[in-house]
Length: 127
View 1 (cartoon, helix red, strand yellow):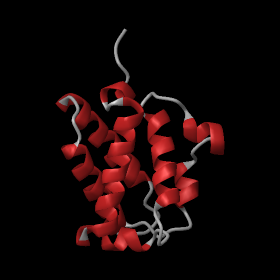
View 2: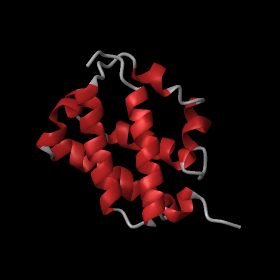
View 3: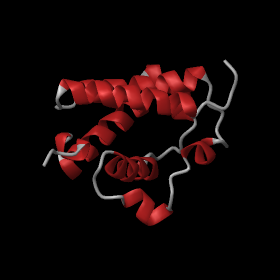
View 4: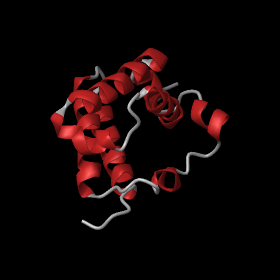
């Protein structure tokens, strides 16, 4: 039986570390200033929602779906202006968090590819 992506990322603790690093970067890095401004002052709720989403998305417990139903990511992000800059800043945070997280390199590349496609799909502004 092969390990899920969730398992390879370190299970619950690994997902939490990845999400925390992502939001720590977003909260402090000038490279993420535009995307940070779209979030609430306190990132606690955002951290928890991404943690729950990433848990199920990587093959772990479907925490997000259990609480909120289908993610409908594009619909849920539509109220926020997301163009190339916002996408790229989000990806900078995620790519950096993935690069720093202990995981097999093929998994890192696979997750980056899928997350880049997902982030591009969230765009709702020209440019």
